[in-house]
Length: 455
Image (cartoon, rainbow, N blue to C red; front, side, top):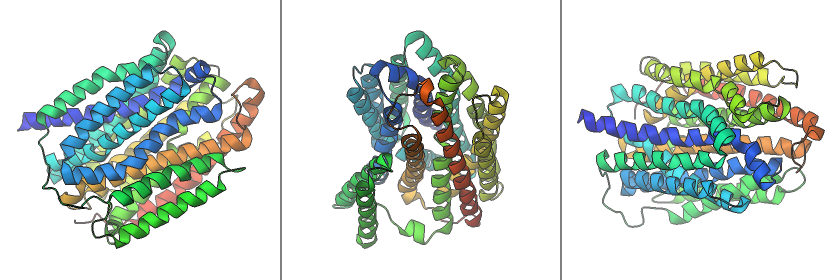
C-alpha cells in the first residue's frame, strides 16, 4: 500500500512539475520564438496566454467530470493530450500551429490540474495532507526553478523547439506510473448530472472577456461586456440548476473556502507575469543571453521549492491564514521593489527582490491549498481542486491580460527594439505597481477568512 501511494505521489508530482517547467522555460525562449515567427510584443504575450486561457476554460468542467466519472481517467487523458500537444508545438512551422498546440496543451493541463490535488487528497489522510500538498507545490516550484536554467540552455544550444520536445518522454513516464497505480474511482453514472449547457456558456464567456481585455483601450469594450454578461448568465444558471457544474453554496455557505479562493485569485493575478516581464527585461534591456537570464530568474523558484514543504507542514499546526497572509505581504514587498526597475538597476537588487518574492510565494501557496481542501467534504475534492486551479489560472490569465493592456498603452503592436525600450520600461514599472496594490488587497481577503473550516 505504501509503495503504491509512493508511485501515485510520484506520478502526480511529475505531472505537477511538467507544466510550470514548460511555462518558465517558454518565458526564457520568447525572444527566440518571436524572432523565428516575426512576432510583436502582443503576439509574444499570446504564446503564454493561449495556454492559460484554454486551461482556465476547461478546468471547472474537467473537475466535475472527474468527480462523476473518475479522476484517474481524466488525469490519464490529460497527460496523454499534454504530451501529444507538446510534440505538436516542438514541430510547429507557423505561429498558428504553435498557438494551436498551446491551446491543446492547455486543455490537457486543465485535466491534470483538476485531478492531481484531488487524487492526493483522497490517497493521503488528513493528518498528512499538508505535508503531501507541500510536496506537490514544491514540485511546481521545482519546475519553475529548473525551467529558466534548462530552458535557457536548451534555447541557446538546441533551439526553442527542444523545450517542447523534452516534455514528451517525461509525459510518457508520468502516464505509465499513473495508469499502473492510481485506483479507478469512477462513480455510477447519473443521467443529466453534467451541466453541459453551463459548461459551454462558461467556456465561451471567459475567452471573450480575456480577448476583449487584450484589445483595450481603443477596442474590445463590446467583447468585455459580452464576456461579463456571459459569466453573469452562467452564475444565474448555476444558482437555479438542479445539478450545477459548480455548487455555488461552496462559496456562499463556506467563508474559508470562498475567501481562500479569492486570495488565490488575487495572488496569482498579482505575481504570475513577473517571470514573463523580467525575462524580456533581462534579455532586451540588460542584453543577457537566454542562459544567463535563466540563471538570474532561478532564485525565486529555488526559495519556493525549499520552503513550500516547510510551509505545508506549518499549516498542519497553525491556522493556514497566518503563514498565507504573511506570504502575500512579502510578495507585495517584492513587487513594490520591482516597480522601481530602470535600465541601470543592478542585478544584485533584482536577485534580492526575487528572493523576497520566492519566500512570499512559498508561504502563501501550500497553506492556502491546505485551507481550501480542508474546507470541503471528500465528495467535492475534484470540484474544489478544479475551482482552486481555476482561481490560479484565471489569476495568471488576468495577470497576462494586465501586462498586455499596459503593453498596448505604452508600446502598441510593435516589436521590442531599442527605439521603444523606454516605453517598455515605463509599462513594466506601472504593471508591477498595479500588482503591488492588488497583492495588498489580497492580504486583507486572506486575513478575513477566519479559522479553518470543518467540512
